[in-house]
Image (cartoon, rainbow, N blue to C red; front, top):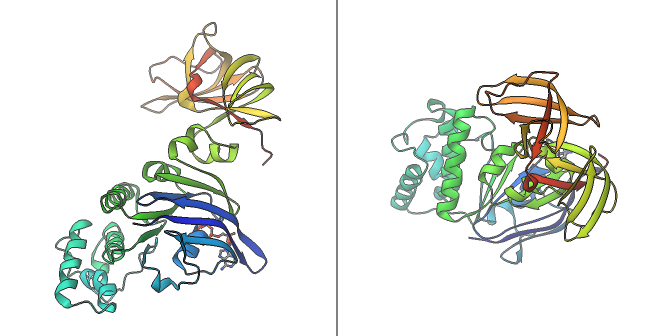
Length: 352
Ligand SMILES: Nc1ncnc2c1ncn2[C@@H]1O[C@H](COP(=O)(O)OP(=O)(O)OP(=O)(O)O)[C@@H](O)[C@H]1O
């Protein structure tokens, strides 16, 4: 178990600044996800942690000790990549035991540990197969077992599910989280998949152009994003611009938006222009008289479990929501929208 801290990490590729001061922390036993779009610096951060890349500035500590001068093979970390990189000519068991063989452990101990690791990732009985004779999901589990068998201090996973189909992704995702929690191992996990990040993590770092836009729990990231970029990247989001914002201190505000005055919570310390974030589940359809907002249905689509609607308000804002599937909602209908204030959140309007 290890506490890992990354402070103001910088990495330059020639004249391109890929990491511009990344800071985050994993407490012992936590799984921390680096989430963000392609090119934002997730893999670069992970490679600096692994020791495959040398940082140009900043610090990485494990249990308070700097590791920047320690070469990758002496850090004692387990690494799992999206391309499993198994040795094609070795059996599953040989692949898993390879690192132990390099460490020159006695054969009986290798056999026992490989056996235990295979059981852990549910690969029993497949030890004699070659990688080409097992499925993609099984290959990824071999890669996972190969990392875990070394009892690493820290587990680093770079999009480990990217090459799997949706069903396998789900299965391996839960397996990784189960194993990580059971073993209490600290882990960093790179993904651009928001639902993966939300489901698996203790903490999420949402990355934006070489920096961490927000570092918080999945719940906080989703319900209390610090800016629109984070809100957009972590799920469906509706935004309404505010005409006036009066702060009351401690992150409470009175606002006026789309002709309605509301009192609600938001990012502390907003002084300039702001916009209201309403997640779809904060909204429900009602009569025009009963709603907080009034609008006209501009789109509706029956998607089985829900009726997806777009409502255009009188200020031109468009709200998307999922209504009860048996609701009779057709384009052109006047409706009211009730909002659950606990799911409404005010954010500063940041120019993209
Ligand atoms: N060896 C390199 N030389 C030059 N630029 C690089 C190199 N490796 C990465 N970059 C650039 O650094 C930025 C960050 O790359 P990185 O691989 O960390 O992003 P990422 O968030 O992991 O993206 P992805 O999800 O596509 O893997 C990108 O703009 C990328 O083009």
